[in-house]
Amino acid sequence: MPYRIASTALFILIFGHSSLSMAQWNVRSFGEGRLALPFEVKVADARNDGVNRVYISERDGAVTEWTHQESGWQDELVAENVQGLAMLAIDDARGDGLTRIYFTEFHKEGGLFEAEWEGRAWNVEKIDDSVQSLCLFLGPGRNDGRNRLYVGTSGPPSDNDTGLIEYSYSTNGWTSQQLTTNGGMQGTGVVADLRNDGVHRILTHSSVLDELTWDDNRYVSTPIDHSERLWPAPTGIGDVRNDGLVRIFINGGQGKLEYAYDSSAWSRHLIDDAVCRGDLIAARLHADGLTRIYATFSAKNWGDRLPKGPLTQYSWNAEDSEYEEEIVLDAISGATAKLAAGDARNDSVTRLYAPDYEGGRILEITSEDPFVATE
Image (cartoon, rainbow, N blue to C red; front, side, top):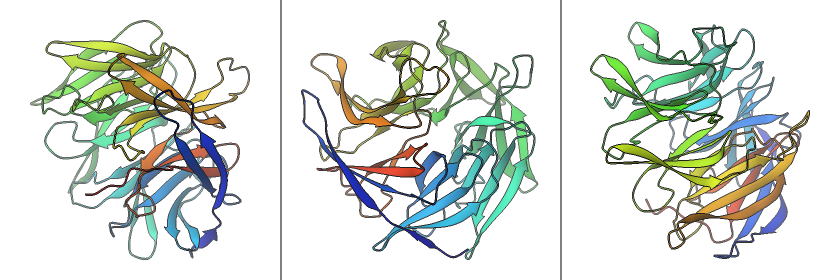
């Protein structure tokens, strides 16, 4: 399919309200007239050509690829007729050095798909046609340096097979293994060095928060937080205090929480007690190079619909031992739509990408004094 050119609009300039800084943001948009209910967004080099692009899924629509050029954003179809909400994961999951796009469908039949760039077009293959999923991530969960796919399935509480599935690729194709049966999963799990001990573990969740550690031939589950009304969705990790230590952060039924492992136990810290739907990620967007948390919100009173809430930045204040909150955008539609950060223009500048679900566009948010990667 030939490229289509989409115009880029600079439509708003926002001033924050933090006592630490008065950050100014440039907000542009793209995708108007091309996107319908954009949900998931990723920044990656999925063609393996050294060029980062933006990848977007639409509800009951398509997965599309967006390339920034001097003339604006150009889009190309990756997959069409995608059913329900589609989660994206992009990396080398086969262990052959090639990055591919993976996506799931969240509807009654469900499906897990792989899309590979073949030089002139995208080739899409179905890996599994029996998973209804709103949770997809990948990484070296067995701590062997090899990525695998992890799919959190959703279904009725009576379904004992609902939980986390691991997919591994070999010369014989894809094989799967059921890791947990602890209920439906939503949002994004993580594979990372969660304890800062050099061991990669899987962060997994349903109504509670657990970690899975590979032990020779099986996964061992360890609880992180099993308190009531936790319901962590989504989850993330990062050096959000800028002290060299990776921490976990979640959004769930008790608000936004941060977890850290110290010697022999997990501790938690309250980031924000507002109980709202919304995504959250860690990113370095300002020239100071500090990692901060960025989160979307729905309004507290959900009702029949999820009203617009703010896009918010959280900065760690070591002196006061708390996170300071700053509003980036007063309101953004689609509180459950996913956030992404990356160098999507290939100019070494890290920007934030946020779907405007109801508006049918992607917001590109740049600090006026942005972080520029030197490596």
